[in-house]
Image 1 (tube, rainbow, N blue to C red):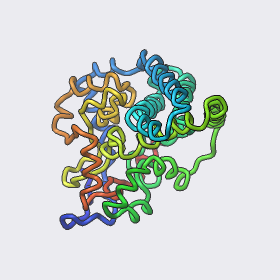
Image 2: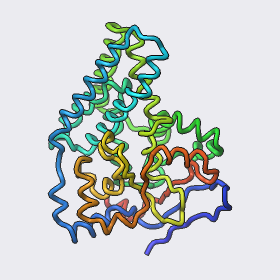
Image 3: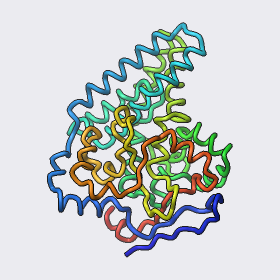
Image 4: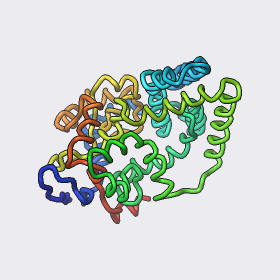
Length: 332
C-alpha cells in the first residue's frame, strides 16, 4: 500500500508545502472496481445528444443580451453581468469542459468546432488550449510539473492570509489561464489559431456594430463569473483539501447549481468516468452508491469559497501532489 505524507500543522497555521501522496491517483483503480461490480455503467458512456442544442441556446441568449445593453449605463451592465451573464458564461465554460472530453459528438473535430462556438460569448479564446491541459489533469492528477490545475509554488507562497486569498479568488481565472503559459508552455497548433481568429473576429464585430459596452458586458460576465461567485466555488471544491486527515483529494458537490453547470459537481464520478456526460453522472452514484456515499462532499459552493478565504490553515498549498511514478512514465 502507498503512503500519504501529511505535514503536521498547528491549528490555524497554514501549511508551507503541498500534501504529498505516494500512491497513484485514486480514480483509475476505483473505476476498475466499480466496473467489475456494475458493468452496466458502460451503457452511460458516449455523447450527450442535447449538448449542441443546450450550448446554442446559451450562446445566442448571451450574445442577444450583450447587443441589447449597447447603450445602457455601466452600473446596469455590471449588475446584469453579475446576476445574469456570469451564470451564462460560466455555463459555457463548463460546456467547453464537457466538449474537451468529446461528449457532444463522437467525432473529435466536431467537438472542437462546437467548443469554438461555445467560446464566443466568453470573449477570450481558450477552448482549444483548455483541452490540451485539462486532459493532462485527468491523466496525471496532482503530478508535480504536469497537472496545471495545481497552484504554483509562487502562488502558494504569496497567498497566505484572508486578504491575499480574497484577491486570489477574485482573479482566479487569470491564475488558471496564465499558470500553464509560465510553467508548462506548449506551442500553439492550427486549432488554436482557428479558435483565436474566430474569437477575435466576433469581438471586433461586437465592438464595430454595437460598441464597447456590449463587448465589455461579455468580458465582465466572464470575469465576475469566475471570481467571487457561487458557481466559481467548484474551482476550489473539486480538489482542495480542507482536512488532510480525510486522505481524499477529489470532492463532489451535490447541490442545485449542478443543473446549470453540466453537473461538474459530480466530480468524483466525473474523474472515475470521464467518458460519461454530465447529464448522466448522477446515475453513477445511483448505481454504485457504496463507492460514493462514504466520501466527503459539499452542498454549497458559496460556503466552500467562504471556508477557503476565512480558514487560516487553508490556502493554495492545500492540494495533494505526487511525483511522476515509474509506472506512469511507462503508460505515456
